[in-house]
Amino acid sequence: EFGEHEGDDKDLAPRPPVVTVMGHVDHGKTKLLDALRNANVVDKEAGGITQSIGAYQVATEVDGTERRITLIDTPGHEAFTAMRARGAQATDIVILVVAADDGVMPQTIEALNHAKAAGVPIVVAVNKVDKPGADPIKARGQLTEYGLQPEEYGGDTMFVDVSAKAGTGLNELLEAVVLTADASLDLRANPDQNAEGLVIEAHLDRGRGPVATILVHRGTLKVGDSIVAGPAFGRVRALLDEHGENIEEATPSRPALVLGLTAVPGAGDNFMVVADDRLARQIAEKREARERNALLAQRSGRRTLEDFMSSLEKGETDELLLILKGDGSGSVEALEDALAQIDVGEGVALRVIDRGVGAITETNVMLAAASNAVIIGFNVRPQGKATELADREGVEIRYYSIIYNAIEEIEASLKGLLKPEFEEAQLGTAEIRDIFRSSKIGNIAGCMVTGGVIKRNAKARLLRDSAVVAENLDLGSLRREKDDASEVREGFECGIVLKGYNDIKVGDIIETYEMREKVRA
Ligand code: GDP
Image (cartoon, rainbow, N blue to C red):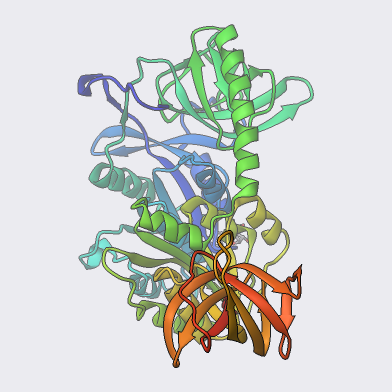
């Protein structure tokens, strides 16, 4: 399996945390990334221009030691969750940016939920504290309501006041990231092995061919290594850092631009170093085939509530994850409250991992894909390419306009009631007037159809003096005059053989019925 063979404990060396910046639009994510890049970037030549390669490293001093941090240069939870949907987790810690003048906004919560769904610790940057209307205390109070307790009030989330514009609080923020990583994560990797990691972005460069920014997870990537990156392969012709400078190698958590691939891999693809070019090509080809197959398999099988139920039965899962989208915060809250009342049964949990007001977006779908969740839309529709994406990713979206219906159906699913239910539909009755004995096909009941229609394919039961004497019988044959009939109507005579059942008497009633799938309201 990818990522194993880390070596022994003594082979592991600390590696810098990898950080993604998230938060509401206009709260200063981009500005903060710029400020950190300018103030703290490492290995910068005087006057050198930092290129945007998708990630860069900064350094800060904590307790007299230089500590490095890798920042993913694409802010927001979209890229973060798109990676997770591909099974890749590039981020160790999330910096959640909240503008102190604006406070907690819908995307703040959305970002928070994405980070929580990924199980990634959060450091809060309360930004724009330079602004006149800034209220950093209020922002703390608001986030407390969402489960982020500031450390200074006895919680375990670090909040740092910053101004991306004035450049204040930046070192404190980086220090908070390092301390959070030290407190809750064991970030170590073996640098002395063949490199493995992730592609964080890639494109085709006119002059240089396929160019990929990779993030080394473990091992050390060197110029000349044969690598496979997703369905692409090749030999590392050059490694560049975020300043556009050639480097000889990239160690764990180090982002680097790789030249020399034969094709452009996708963001979120794994890369690894292998023994030689031939092996690299073989693996790349296998991966390509596997990806194609996986895509086909995904398209043919959607992940639905019913699938969830069946995996529940097999003991493969014990949690139904939901994403709620509604037309107003009141309805979303009401829906969530009602869901909380559902008796889900022993050992099973129902968890809402994200909720929000407004149309179902591609981001919602990506989170659902990444987390195996089902999306519930309440009086809202999908937006843009969300439906298409849901189809492609095999995400189920359910639409409701009445809370009761949503609750009832989810409850029913959880109880396994969504397997089709059948009900009996009466077809026809016949009275036995005469009996003909046949050694070949058994006793033939000479009947008069007294109600409805007798059908050849129907199920039958036999009644004697109003009591059922036999159930669940099949018609062995149905005849009208001398001919086989598929059905015989009321008022006509017919001959009926009950398959494998000969204990009939004149005066018995044959009642026929069929099982129909119950129509749900
Ligand atoms: P993003 O959408 O979260 O990436 O936000 P931007 O980084 O684009 O910032 C949005 C706006 O807020 C821009 O006009 C920034 O100049 C401004 N801004 C960002 N940080 C600060 C700050 O610390 N103080 C002030 N006063 N303005 C800021």
